[in-house]
Amino acid sequence: MTEENTTETEDLRADTAEGAPELAEHDRIAALEAELAEAKSQVMYAHAEAQNVRRRAEKEAADSRAYAVTTFARDVLSVADNIERGLAAIPEELRSDERLKGLVTGLEATKRELDAVFQRNGITRIAAMGLPLDPNQHQAMLEVPSADAEPGTIVQEMQAGYMLRDRLLRPALVGVAKKAE
Image (cartoon, rainbow, N blue to C red; front, side, top):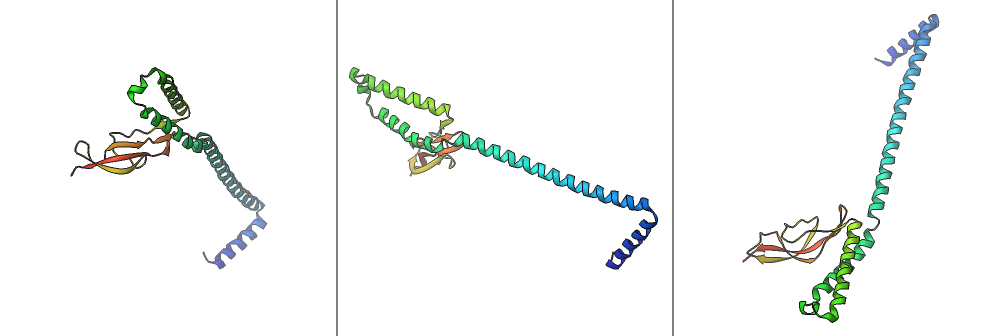
């Protein structure tokens, strides 16, 4: 429709409205209904956006609570590593020595308590030995020639890896089998 035709239609409608007040009332009601529909639509969009913002805020708050201990947990992992190294360094003949039994028992109890604290806080050790390398959880440090293991299989764990719930806290540092030469 051209601009000239639009103007003629509007003029004709105005002339008709003067002669028929019910047509003018009908046009006014139609305009108000259109405005109402637009206002309802805007309210619905605003309501949906407010719900999305609320859900995002709730999720961010939950994540903050769940993962607030990440830095602290990473720092405590070195304590767990040192306790394990200490226990591994005690030769079997010294473990049975009565003079050192209290020390060994104390280190083992400390290790168990630390493991329990990790478990209560959602910190789990990543399985590595004998599994295929998973770059999302393991960091390959070296390749080890092996005739027994499939290439890409983890045959050595140099440092344990840990997860905090579903997030990587620290990757496991591993040695991966490669085809023997």
